[in-house]
Image (cartoon, rainbow, N blue to C red; front, side, top):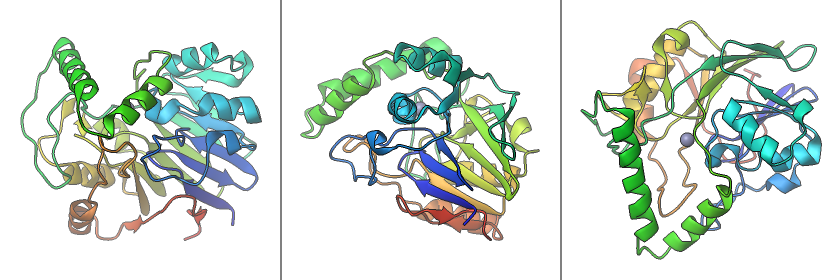
Length: 298
Ligand SMILES: [Zn+2]
């Protein structure tokens, strides 16, 4: 098997191309109430590169441990690099990008970095098939105050599982962090290309020309299209992304129950239905944790 993919929960994957191991995000040490992915960051003893989509803890936390154990090079935003520098990851293994770079990972693997968008975590959000309308033209200040309100209600919640969630969050964010900008990465190998994004947002004009063989897409929250929340459902957002990219296969991520009780398992039914309607020829790969799926074999 030349190219295999292991899903490690949320948007974290291990991509193995021949002998080259690339982590896509690094978050696998989750709150104890979440289903385990079968691997801890401290178990990882082989990695060449770690690509980080954005710097929130459910994507970045763990990268420092993998880097220390393996000597892997981390590629991410200036915010990611700042945080990894504070964790004493050696400078020569940190590469800050802002989108527009093409980086050689090995003799036969390159990665192109593109600016992307984070999902609208500040806006109203519904179930995957539920259309959400409005929240247009909201200023950065209003977005920030919405987020602060949500954080306050989370920390005061009386739900029995919330103490565990809050202490996990405190552990993961001992170094305060910003999102740092979100990226899409296009990994080009001799076997084909893989586009990976770790949050539901994009710039339309960038997505539509990439045409990867495989797309690993996030299915969570309210989709962000060119800086504004989608006027529609998450299912419609994913279908629109697939229509822009036109991949042969897709893998969905970020839909697992990674942070209960704040998260619930996402019902992929409405997304499947929307994709079957709009892009019936796309192969949707159903992936469990740690399956070493031969992603470019078909
Ligand atoms: Zn995020």
